[in-house]
Length: 522
Image 1: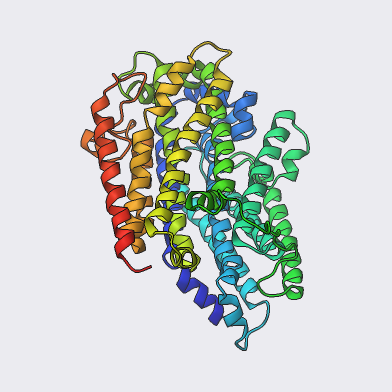
Image 2: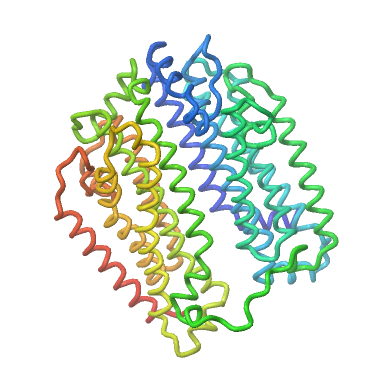
């Protein structure tokens, strides 16, 4: 219990923020959905959009056609995305308290005390279970509080527990990965790869209606049919799978050396290349895996959302709220233009995530003491930090290009959108992306303990994106977002002035951040 209390103390802020964000999102979405689909015609129109191969691959199978309610629409649209968010939360949580702690030498210090070999793993499993049950119950509670039509206690519990058990299973898969591999980066990479494979298997299985949907934890979680049949059997299966994976992880943990994994880290080359011996080469070596993983992910997401363009009429059929949201985006002349403008904003928001992580990785390396070995040589702090900034800028351009390719791959056959339009819509947000990671540069360089506050700005921009067009939010509130001053092409006139001003602010923040790195203690 003392060790569990120790973990709870360490998690009191991070996990509280995750829980509050997820619970607030559940309440907001449950409250908004009845206004989006006020009658049966609008709900049937939404289901017609969801019931095509591309949308099934993205969202999951459609159910409840004969007795559709806003609650069923909510579950079909949101369950998979809440599940992914909770899975991500669990991957970070488990990796933080297992393999990352071993890398930093904390586990060795604790095991030297009179505690059991499995104390850490058992405490982490207990905390993860409590965290996921709390998440499930909060989602169920706030869904009920919203009093959405078709909602009930059994449906809300099915909805929440499906999300929670998916998160718990992936927590145990991450724990198993931490026993197999010897670095935190590999552990996290394998866990996210398993999530991606699970999503792909689910998509394939749902489209072809075969057993792959049941093999995938995410696919199995969708089989509960929340607010319709309320099938608890998949939740039980997910719990049993998590229990088995946890048992295997504990068995391995008893038999491996502290700090080591079953699979040893791959040996590097005897001699580094000339490129690797430079700051930019070293930084690229650290970040290249996540760089290309995000490139593939952005391409897939852009392709998925681009596939909706051909079905846009069905998507808004009889749905005045969604039509108003699209038309109210920026006074668009056509709904397709409004949808493309929304996609540009949304994809830019997604791309900003790896850019922020790229800059924050400098602080991670600093906290682990690895940068001192480099800066102690003739390499300057400015050169090392500048290499992280350069990689972030390169990543902004490359990911924007991959988003264009993804959108064009699923829209070119329709002839509704040109390649030049997609390039303009996407690349116009580059100054905003530069501003986002420049804010991270400023915080890491000058106020490293507050670097996580950049996610408040990201969250604010996300809220403005989703709800700014549904409700009467003052224009000044939109302008406070780094993305709010960018002209939303193709439905707004292009203006170079806000782009120049944004770039100037971003440059200033970078200069101040780099100056801070040179002056503060490492």
